[in-house]
Length: 198
Image 1: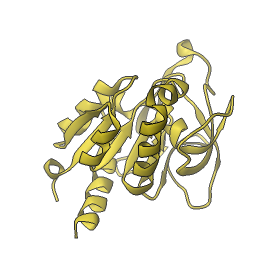
Image 2: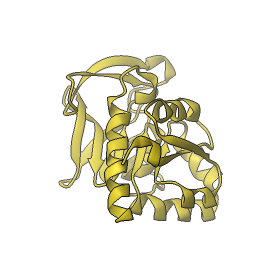
Image 3: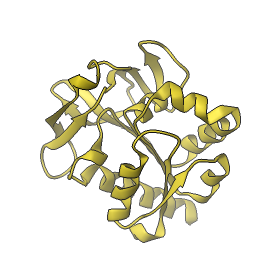
Image 4: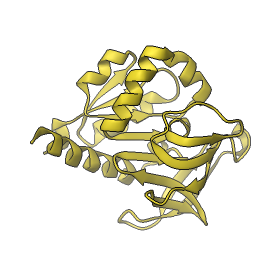
């Protein structure tokens, strides 16, 4: 299966969804901006971009949230920053509702305000050596469950996790020229979609 055969949705209620749309398109995938619950039926995977996690929850509403909850349990989903918060099953500072599909604790705004944003080189298990990571009002993972794989670290701090078909990053790979994170996600989508279509 090639990238052109998969359709990735980007949750487009707020945040920099355009940057997330461009990267999978550059890698050959079809991308749909998802603004309504019924659009989830026509996609193979979903990206939940950065933004404000509490605002996401308000904009989703009960029907969309229920449909999204079902989707993320069945199909590949990639969340960055606020998206990582929404995927984690334990949210701190302050506690809030989430989709709870990733066995990890995450602290909101752990690095301070917008002015405390930074770009750092981090270690990763992805092929190709260190990874450039852009942090903007980033959350921070604390507890990581036993069934969760750490894909990247900033020093000792895990910054990208995978559990099954779910990937979550506290940084913004869509703002870096390095395409490896999105390529890794698309490879996961291809495997999952090929299995589901058999």
